[in-house]
Image (cartoon, rainbow, N blue to C red):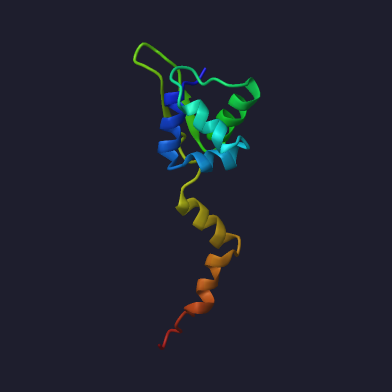
Length: 110
């Protein structure tokens, strides 16, 4: 079970406001604000909790269970780097491949 502090920390890691979490989860901002005024485990209806936690999970948040050191959150390592994405775009003829027309190769003379 996630705690309220974990949810707040997750929002902070993502740079999300309560409005952002509301949009991503489909839970109203007033409900999120009300839940965040409490302390302890994330309360509310099970469906509401699931929507909030699923939205944070989809954004890359990992909830760390209590292990004697306290619960926490961290961000999942990105699945691919921007360089990988750029390589795919170039090799597949995406927008980055338009560099060839913008900067034509010089011939041997010039």
